[in-house]
Amino acid sequence: MVARREEIRRRLPRLVTNLIMAIIFWIISIFIPPTIPSLIIPGINTEASTLVWILTMIIMGIFLIRGLTDALIIGDVLTDAITKKLGVKEEKSSKRAAKEFVYIIAIVLIVTAISPLLANIQDVGGYLSTGTIYIGLGLIILFIYDIGRIIYKIIEEKAEIFADYVAQGKKDKSRE
Image (cartoon, one colour):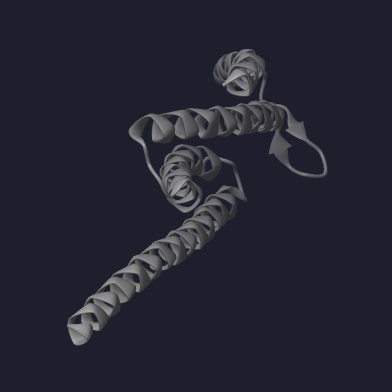
């Protein structure tokens, strides 16, 4: 209990700070690039405003990823607390399946939010957007596979318990 509180006390301020920094860089990415005159950077033939926008989006992404790691750990702590309150007996496998379901939802939301932003980058935006979608899809498939394994294991254990119960009942009847 104390370890969970300490983890939340340590992670929550970092999460808030990372989210505030991400919002600040998002605002910078909206207002600063239009103020830069249309200077073409020699060698790469790209406008300076586009490079500033890409740089601010990358920095924003870094803060979002840092915030996401803190949010996932806080989510794990809260999931543990909620499942304990609900009295879930198969803590390890069912908790992991629930966490992975939350991760799937988070991946869908993140890819949905990032994909249009990446698509706006000149020349490579389409590739980045498509790559992000495929990476997200791969992670989702991995998590669904693991959830399937967990469910299979739980059902297999329950089926063995049921089979032992039925076999025990037949042995008792044959003795009579």
